[in-house]
Length: 153
Image (tube, rainbow, N blue to C red; front, side, top):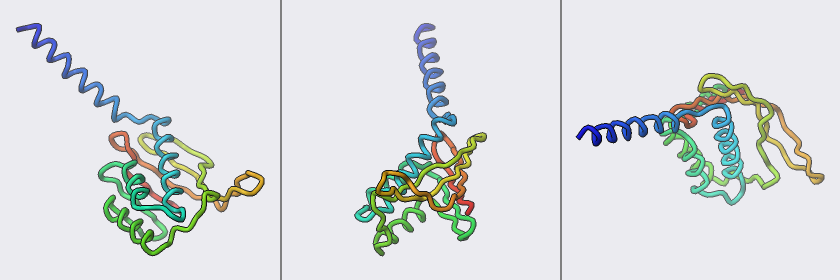
C-alpha cells in the first residue's frame, strides 16, 4: 500500500513540475511567440487571407488576451479583436502581397514582458528590405502565452 501511495505521490509531483515548466516562458520562448505573432499578422494582411488565418493568430494568444492601442483608444478582448479582423477581411481591407513584411528591429526583455521595436516594410527587387517608420509594442505573457499586446505608437 505504501508503494502505491509513493508512486501516486511521485506521479502528482511530476505532473505539477511539468505544468510549471509548460507555463514558464523565458526570453527565447517569448521571442518565438512574438515572431509567430508578426508572421500571422503578415499573413492576415495579405490579399486572399481567410478567417482561418485570423483564427491562427488568435490561437497564438492566451484565452484572456487583450489588445490595446493607446493612440486609437482601442481596447479589445480576444473575441472583439477577432471580430474586428473579420470585419476588415469582409470589407476587403487586406491587400498586401508577400513583399510586405513586418520585422523586429530591437527587443528588451523584462519580467513576463517584452518591449519590441518593429517596422512594416517592403522587400525590394534586389532582395533588400526597406523599413517604414519604427513602432513600439509591449507584449505581456501569462501561462506561457501572449496575454497582452499594447501598441504604443
